[in-house]
Image (cartoon, rainbow, N blue to C red; front, side, top):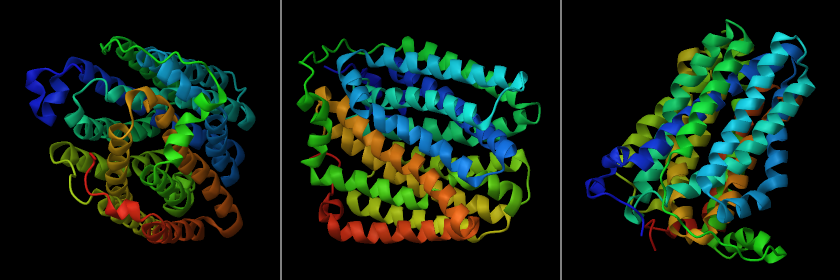
Length: 410
């Protein structure tokens, strides 16, 4: 039985539940480190090469590692202690960040070496993501899973508000300063994850067969709701993801420096954090499918406004709305995956879910970089935003299960 103290009757009390509080704090530090790392890598890589395509390659490299490892990481998350997996992955990310610091100090970093270390971080994140997501449902009672997911997202957004701006400010002192700070945050996050007390669940030790490796994919394929939901995110963000181009917007369109890039990266989290806190207190429990589809349309519209803007204030507002709409979709998807998947399968299903979201984010970055190279930066973002809206409309009719789902629970 999942441990749950009597005091955790209300969603806000989750943060007073030690296992979840440790999980939440650890997640904040890890996400903060990841976004500081993204700011430093993006600015340093663009400074070295001046190529939008190279910025897109950051996403492509991470997508490639995730695609190659998805079937393995799902099995790992279902067979071994998820806390240990999370801690080890964060240690690996810390080592990669420290290597970037050493390379910067020695003047030995090239675009190729940066991308190679991005692949290491991407591999660690691929193992960490399904283990982290699947861990939530073992820390709280089932009725509190949606609230726990919202608090988990709030941790992500809180870190995203401060950390990119902090990364941009620290970059003024040198890229190596950012990388060393990132390595320290990853190590602390790993330590906190190691101290999480979770129930001693007997992990599945079934024989490793082809069917076992493919079981997560088959489970999703046989659920029209999960398949439609994940593919919606895949194609919507694939077209609408413009984050890879933020360094170009900061320098060439909005004419700011690293501090401006930090603000642009932080802006989506401002709207997302406010929304996730509301969702933690008042979870969406009616017409969840329709709400998710409408949120995707708003996401696309906000992308169009950002793409057309030449004023920093309007760009920040558009990104805040983008973040707010995105978090609604994220919380609904994550809750549905956890509540409609048995614990023995959560690692494998979460791994495939992470592949869908990773594909949309990381391959979307490559798509944005490629489109910017072919059509120009602003047209690429405008086309992407309109594409996101079209995807939401098409999926409404291709997957009627999405608009029909009313409750998170069956």
